[in-house]
Image (cartoon, rainbow, N blue to C red; front, side, top):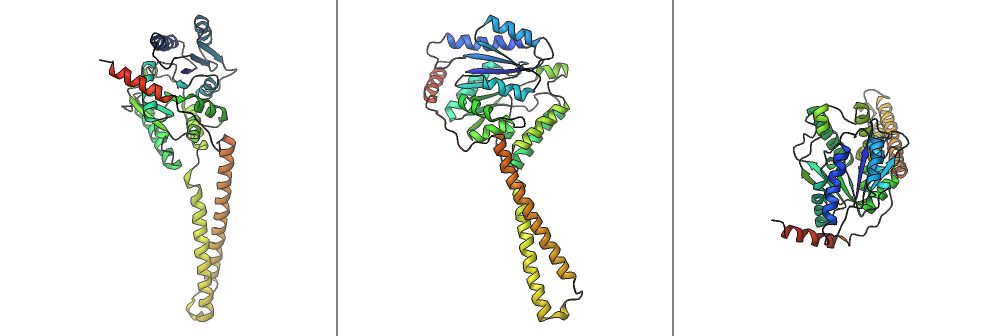
Length: 334
């Protein structure tokens, strides 16, 4: 397993996070029957604004399994996470935040759920919905995710969380196609639909205590826009169908009024008005059809530019051994 931690202002919390991961690593190493091990902890310095870069180097010097990655400038948590995943090598990749709100000792709950349900991605889903204990922050996040889920028909967006466990090959393949505007969790859905969630109590203690966060309003807005533009909005085709219906009904209405003009001209009270109205409706319908076709084509090009694959293969045969180990572990746990 590989842990990936993007770091921007984590000097006060990073050592505690490393110690927690190290404790889980030691517990696995002491168990000769463990089918998995924590092979690396990748700390990604996203041009941190505090003393984190130097701290990352000191931690890496003290343990060979800690891998330092320094980005040339600040690219944001999303890009730092992608960079860390690209440097990973584990069969499973776990992403956690720098501030300790994601407990490493709960990773095995995610892994157990993944192998027992045949999942490729498992998110930690907050049970209370008050991670930041701020109604506007937690409420706006939930509302936006549900709105995006409705707009895109992607049933996994409400689960999205930065505490996630991903099958290694899928994580690296997804990271490799992520461009500047590609939302990583949307791209995950291109590679697998086996996405689950495990509920657990999560708290952003740094935000609760200090009110500080790595995300300001501008970053949150950019985060939301990236999610929107990486998704295929399902209503893009609606304009095409409305235009087609308007054009067809206008065409039939035009035939009707033409016949009426020939057979019973006295029934038309205002000559010229019906034909003008029909032509306008037909023209509007035709324009809507053309715009709908252009939007559909543009949407296809955007997804191609984002790197959506034609297909992807995966080997899940190693899960059986993990399932047996977790079953044995549960049987021997009092």
